[in-house]
Length: 554
Ligand code: UD2
Ligand code: MN
Image (cartoon, rainbow, N blue to C red):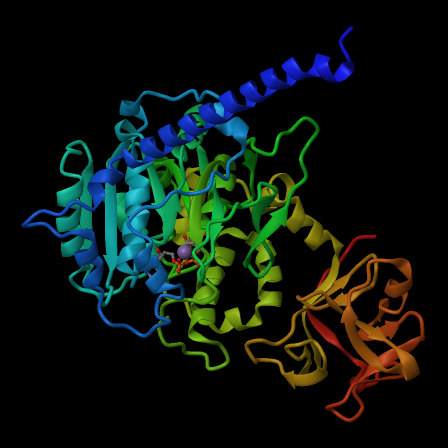
C-alpha cells in the first residue's frame, strides 16, 4: 500500500515542472514586450548624423534660466531621455477589447500643441510619446506653435532634430510656427486649428506623455456622434519626481458659480464599469479632441478670452447648449504635469486689489458669464463682485448671433440636463456673495482662524453662501459661522450631523441674521468687532446684506 506522502510525491514533481514552465513562458513574454518597445521608432531616436542635431545636443541648447522657471524638475526631465516606458494605467479590459475604428481617410487627426517657455526635453517627450504611440495611418499632422518663448532657436533646432529621426514618416505633416510676440494659449490654439487640415483636432499641453493605445478608444466614440467631443483620462505626473500615476475614473469635470474648474465625484450606475466612457459637464481640463469642422462651426475658442484660462469651460458650455456632448474616455490615458504654480507671467493688471493672473481669469470668466449664463450671471457677479469693474472692449452681438444660428438652448437647459451639481448648489442657496454691514464686509482670514470686517473691494474678500435647508452660513472653504461658549462667534468646519448643525443655524429676520439656538442677532456695534446681541429691529449695526438674495416661492 502507498502512504499518503508517497502518493503525493509524483504530483508535486508535476507541479514543480508546471511552475518552471510558466516562469519560462513569463520570462520569454517579458523579453518580447521589452524588445517590442525598443523596436519602436524609439530605437532610431538617439541616432545622430552629421548635419542633424542629436538629442543630447538638442537639449544642451536650453538657455540658462532661473531654476524654478518651469515649475518642474528640469534636470530630472533632461536625464529621462526622449521617451520612457509608462505604467499601464488603463483597465485591463481596455487592452483586450476590440475597437471599432473608422477608416483613416475619414478620421485622421491634427494635433495642436502651443507652448510658452517649455523645457526642451519636456516638449520633446510630449512630441515623441505622441509619435510612437499613435497609429501612423491616423496621425495626419503635428502643429506646433511657439508662443513667443524666450528660447528663440528652439523651433529651428526641433525641426532639425525631427528631420533626422522621423525622416521616414513622409505622410506626417509638420507645421511649426512662432508668434514673435506672446499671444497666449487661446489665440495660439485657435491659430493652430485654423491651419489644420485633419478630420479631428486634438489640443495638447506641451508637458504631456501619451500612453499606449490612447487614440483608439477616442476615435471609436467620436465616430458614433459627429457632435461629440472627448477628453482622455488625465494621469497625473508629479512635477518634482516626474513619477507617472494613475488618474481616477471616478471624477468628472465641473465648475462652480465663480466659474472655477472643479473635479466632481461621480457614481457608477448599476452594471456600469469604471472604464466605460461617461458624460461630463466640462472637459477634463484643456486636453480635448473633436471634429475640426464642428470646432470651427462653434466659433473655435472664444477669441475675446485672453492668454490663459476658461477657454475649455466656454467651449464645453457652448457645446452642450448648441447640440453637442462631452465624454471622458477612461480607456484613453494621457499623462500631464499638474504644476503647483503658473510658470509664466500675465499682463499687468489694472485693478490693484487683484493679482495679474486673477484679473486675466476674471476677465475671461466675465465674458463667459455675459455670453452664456443669461440671468444666472447674477450668481457669478454676486460671488465675483470685482468682475463688474473689469472693462471689456467688445459687445456680445457675435455670440448672440452664433446662439441664434445654431439654435442653442438657454443656460437653464444646462442646469436641468447637464450639471445637476450646479443646479443643486443654486437650488439650495438662499443667499450668496459678500456679506456687508454698512461699508465693511465680513471676512474670514486665510487660515479661517479669525473673522474681521474688511474693505469689501479687496480681491480675496470672503464670499458666503447661506443654505436654505440647514441655515448654515459657509465660506468657500466650507467653514461655517457658529456661536460657541459665552456667545462667542466662531468659524468651524461646516457640520454634517444634526447636533453640530444646530449651533450653525441662522435665520433671516429682514436684513438681520438671527442665530436659531441662542435667539440673538449678529451685531457690529463698534464698527470693527462682531458680537452677538439682543435683536433690535432697525438697528443699522445688525443689518447685513448679501450680494445676492434669492427670492424663492414658497
Ligand atoms: C489647464 C489645461 C490647459 C488649458 C488651461 C486653461 C489641462 C491638462 N491643462 O492648464 O489645456 O485649458 O488650463 O487655459 O487641463 N501656453 C501658451 N501660451 C501662454 C501660456 C501657456 O502657449 O501664454 C501653453 C503652455 O506652455 C501649456 C498650455 O499652454 O502647454 C497650457 O498651459 P499650462 O500648462 O500652464 O496650464 P494648465 O496645465 O494649468
Ligand atoms: Mn499644463
